[in-house]
Amino acid sequence: MLEITLTFEDGTRQVHAAAPPVCIGRAPQCAVRIANWRVGKQHARLLRQGGGIVLEDLGTLSGTLVNGERVATHGPLQAQDRVLIGPCQIQVRDMADAAQAYKAHGVADEAAAVAQTPSAPVPAQAPAASAWLPYRRSLHAALLQALDLRRRDVAGMSDQALREEARRLLDELVDREPDLPEHLDRALLCRMVLDEAVGLGPLETLLADPGITEIMVNRHDEVYVERAGRLSRHDTAFSSEQAVRGVIDRIVAPLGRRIDESSPMVDARLPDGSRVNAVIPPIALRGASLTIRKFPVRRLHMPDLVGMGSLSEAMAQLLALCVRRRKSIIVSGGTGSGKTTLLNILSNAIPEDERIVTIEDAAELRLGHAHLVSLEARPPNLEGRGRVEIRDLVRIALRMRPDRIVVGECRGAEAFDMLTAMNTGHEGSLTTLHANSPRDALSRLEAMTLMAGLDLPLAVVREHIASSVDIVVQQARLAQGQRVVTDIIEITGMESGRIQLQDLFRYEPGRGFVDSGMRPVFMEGDMP
Image (cartoon, rainbow, N blue to C red; front, side, top):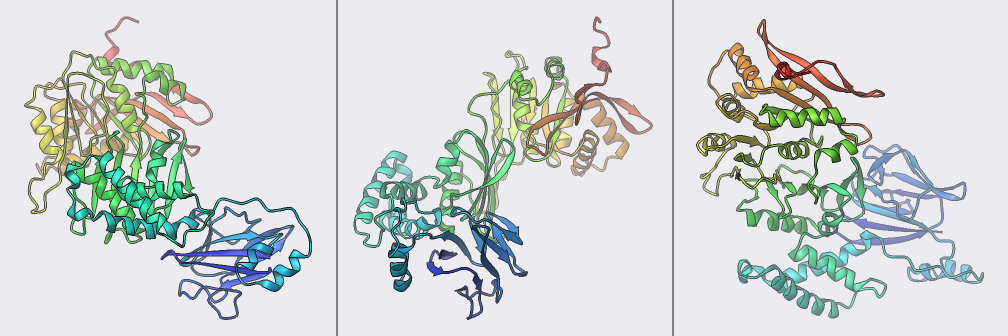
């Protein structure tokens, strides 16, 4: 016999008991019926094969997902496997001794037959994550109502005071809740509800895990994490869409930012510096989405990257020399390739007696210099006023007597102002941008410079880039998750209207880091 638990999107649960083969679909004759248009008449089938239970999709349009991946057949199924069919998540348990389990669901005849044969007691299992959801959802709503946050001076309360009051009210609610099963860990349930109501919910545990570098909430019940460069689905979940929205509001409110239907996306940061991006409906079609990029607790240095195999010792020495010699550097790469991490490490080579001004859309740089000014862009207010763009901050920074300007990321017309700063007495400045190769990085710089609306000829733009930028460092994340510096190139000038590049180092699969043997132009006067 099989115990089949259905958990629907609204939190309701159904438990079915049936002997394989078990047909799942919306047709009345199906042993497990799911009356929903996203479910086929005969959607999937559970079979016993080779001593285990195998799930077979019956060729439906919407498909059958197991642990987030679409499957045609999958098996043997494990108790922790999450099967998604239409609007509900399904868990399957093969009940070898189901006497007690099936009595609870009214299958008396089957239970009596099984009870005649003595067997060893089945150890109690912790409930699946989905089993907590209905209780978390109801307690969360009740706690918010009890707190009546709209009538309290939350801004005037410390986090500890608010949490203590919420804990007291939650204990009262749990004591009055008659439907809580005895096997549920009430202390853990209270902590989960409390985190969602006045904290960051399931994110609290994920943020505390040093092995996780990125957290991606696709919707309230779908959370992915990145470990060692690889993505995997995590078994945690928010209790509801409302809980996700509440967490987003608690992140952005202290920063003076807002997110609502008129402004449905926002960039923010956590107190520890982690970068946050949030998107809500109507542009997020599946519900509120949240992405958090974590940064190492300990400041990394160049030997750390060498030890991790991200670059060679010779490459590290060259980059440190470029920074000390005030060469303007662009770090290029794709999303999650490690551009910001490398930028932070390169800044370690800047002399302590120099004044640095950092400019970011959402502050995430972690420079350790004492003589540092950090500027952050600002979105418009409710009236559409007060917007401060990165381009405005670059122009302001030029009046602050900086020795170096560090722009977290160039995305638009601010590239022209950044290049101008590099070419007018602020050599050795650093920035990042998204591109697939060093040559693509220069093409993006050209396009972003033209966005400034100055109607400059392309030849003039290229000349401007060639005279402003010295080094382009290309980052990439390999298929196995490792982040490496794939290219270090030097810009040597212009020839026939084209920017000339010189390879200094490159990464080749199978060979590793290769020295081109070329000596940088700025070192030609040095002793051999």
